[in-house]
Image (cartoon, rainbow, N blue to C red; front, side, top):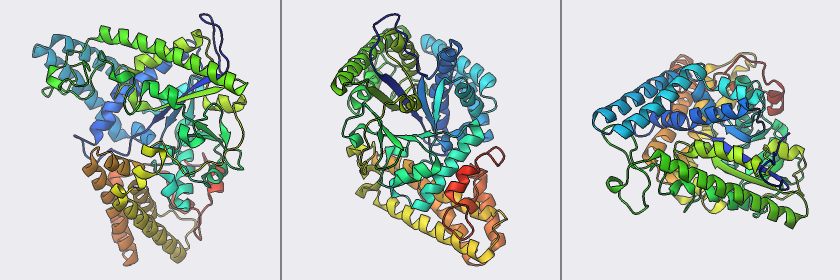
Length: 530
């Protein structure tokens, strides 16, 4: 149960819940710099390692039910992948060398600071992460430190996805979580908070009891979870008033002048030497980073956030006439990767909130403790620009929308035809598995997001078309009656895209030899580790 200690301040009614969404697309074997594996390794070093360290310290103090922590299956796969683990170890060693190069070049303070950061991360990695991320998250789950949230396999924008593939990705994603953590999540972070009516039925069938939406999807009334339509599945909404205090499209703590500047690099070493200084100041003119100055800003922003949460809980509880819920939700990568001081801020906030009389708990706690209101007729929504679907379905990405529809149709038709012809319900088909795997990677929501936001748009389009090409190539070989050729192609594509080895195309719902989604949920844990 959530615990709110009130040694420093009078208790306030209600509960505060922090939700973090950890996600990166499949990057292993798909380029290194400027976009590719470097993105994974930077996020791992700056966010996942220090965040696990923070949570481990808090767990050692007996603190529990601190936050709801989402890890998407595609990210979990990379954090467990042998290729990624070897690459990460090399990257951490290289980080330490780059710090030493900075010191040797006369940037003593920068080199010393970065060397300390790299050495700590390397020591953590070699002792706690050597067998991948799953043991790290599993330990925190077992200690009751966090609620782990799952999700669909490769982060599709679900409202636009064929219902059969949507059901498959969700049930397989939950099964993958069970394989890695020994636990099937009851809560999920819906990718991009995307929703369309009817999805609640799919959630219920898969055993999902609660999921995240953005605040405007609940018309801004996020102070209670809301059952969706006539289901018992509860939607929890992000409180924008509180969440935007940390991070918003225009403002937030990370833009403070004392914090380390994300965008400015020392091109000789790849290190980040400057503080924000001022938003209108060019990179070369920014002041050097000062950790002590940044630490003072962290303390100030912790105090501001705690006061904001207290005010919000008091005001909303009074308005409702009952204890209210406040949910602040963010991409995990904000804390460390984007905002260098983010892990420090999180640790201090998670200590300060209970001392300020605020009860901290997870989404599961909120549901169990009755922070649930009346049903809501939830409409089409997302947490993207405009809170609609434009980021993933707008004119700017019309080509990707059409590509996704074509590839999904081709994949499903090919799989259905192959199953009908062979009738081998008892035999696994690695070609079918790889074809489905490539289709799932094609429809990742990340590619449309990156194009719409003009963030490595070329890389995103290349990735979508590369996976689409794999589907077409495999389907063509099968259609031409060349099974040996198809097997060779599948093995080649699997060398780069062999994630989710437990994925089995026979479980795709709706075909003549398919296992249903409900049966897949019931069979969770019957296969070996993914």
